[in-house]
Length: 465
Image (cartoon, rainbow, N blue to C red; front, side):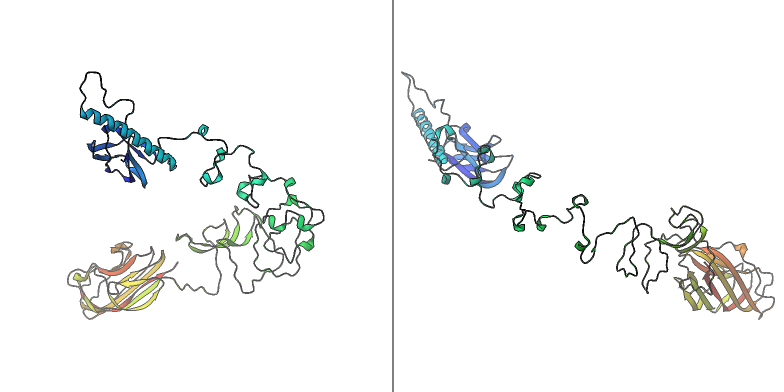
């Protein structure tokens, strides 16, 4: 007869049990050897068993969910008195109580014999005869630190080479524990291999003979408050921190000088190694802040450190290969009248394109790529079809679709006083533009019957600085 049912853990159940019991309250549950109280029993039957559900869930494991019977031994299933009737059911329950208790005790004894820590019967230390447990009866790795008396482990109990570094507390090996010898080097305990790199400090050294530096200092830093004389010396990779003075000329033999965002200083009136806080420093420096005010190389004369360049540069010539410049020529043939007002002039040819300029809108629009001061020039000409000498016509500049700087900046003229006359309009203007501004030329103030052909001219934009 069974008095328990084992299940693999994981989940909430239901976990089925199929052994008989007297009362539903006799059914107990443990998980992993620990008593479980938060469970419910469904479909209980005193003969066939039932189902256990554990809402809190169970840990995964093999046979770690134990459903068992624990029959009440103190309260009799039935009590018989003199003269009372004896029922078969009472007799059966009394027999069952006896059988169930005997079966449960047998299960506990078997569990104890199998070493099950969850057994209801446990053997205390007072019940074990001294010196009766042999080594083979102790499970491997089951003797804990608390089971060993202080100072109970002697040297004879420690295997050779068994004490590792991790078993020695920091700062606990004293000089007296290290083997020494005044004559035999192999008997000395501390060798070169036992000294950590970089562990011998200045305080541990008396003197170092020059013969101990072979063949050179390697990567070690050399520091001196005196003068280092090396004669004519070739230095490979040399890193100098702090200030240095060279009394002779310096040649790089065709190699580079890397400044790492520093400056080339001709003179600082506060001194060669000053804090660079003065106002009279002649120097050259490069700025990468992408600010049009001082981006690129700055030449500073009698100024503060890394200010915007202010020096006059004298040179035979200066070539600015990336300076913005573009010119259109050969305007598209067309008749100009009052319906063409504010319509950009289109050209057929791009004669010049430098820097980051580009054309668009059928060669009527020039877009600049750099902030700066630009010179804009335009000349258009053709022949009068219908004259109107009283008309005040102008060609004007537009920036980003609007007249710029203003309409009154451009002079007015008529196409001519007679049909068939040649006419020409011209303007030249200097203005500041920003990167990605686009420029166009349009006719303005064409009124009445005035009409002319357009077939010659140019439109040019050049960055000055």
